[in-house]
Amino acid sequence: MQPALHRLILLGMQLCSHPPGKPNASLSNKRRLKSFIAKVKGHYGSRIASKALEHVEDGSASIMESLTYMILALPIALGGYGLKGIKLNHEMKLSSEGANRLEQRRCIIDLYYKSEKVAVEYESYAFHSSPYEQGRSMIRAAVLERQGIIVMPLSTIQLYDKKLCKDFALNLASRLGKRIQIRTGKFDEMHESVRTLLPRRNVAERG
Image (cartoon, rainbow, N blue to C red; front, side):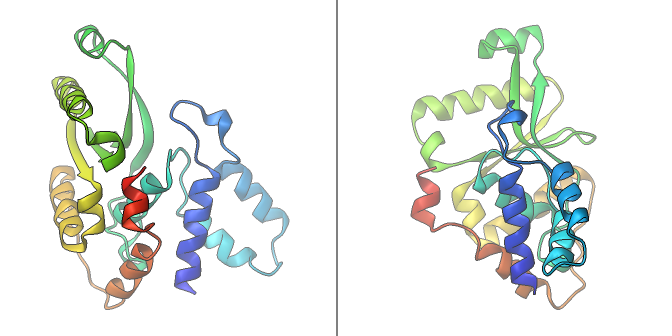
């Protein structure tokens, strides 16, 4: 039941995904999916689909962002770290100084805790391995931090290594002023179920 639920959550995230700043390019969104499920209420699969939709959010730009969201934000009972409140691909207006530094007026933050002003930036190997991209990421982080935003980069290596990922989640929780309290014996099983959805490492590193 739970592995199927995790797959449905990921499917919902992908159906509601779109390139940053282009919501009209998504195949669907949470509102439309909710309306469809309401119309087929009572049919086979509608109950679990409705349960999965509770944990779906609009705006992911990739399967890796969707899975990062699931690992960080799903309830502990479902194998996530329970750090809810994420806004996916939040568009941030830059100060005039920041706009000059980055040569753009706005930037997109991968996963953003708006009230706490904490940004999680997923840094895939494919797009952040060159010296140019690494340098630009550092400048971008500095610009955001000048605007009072804490930037926490999350690499593919950290995401795929269970211990490193847990360390990241604990550090993130501290930044958010929260505590991760795992009080269910099912967490490990559920967490592993989410992690089985991660693409093969070599595939993830290509994008």
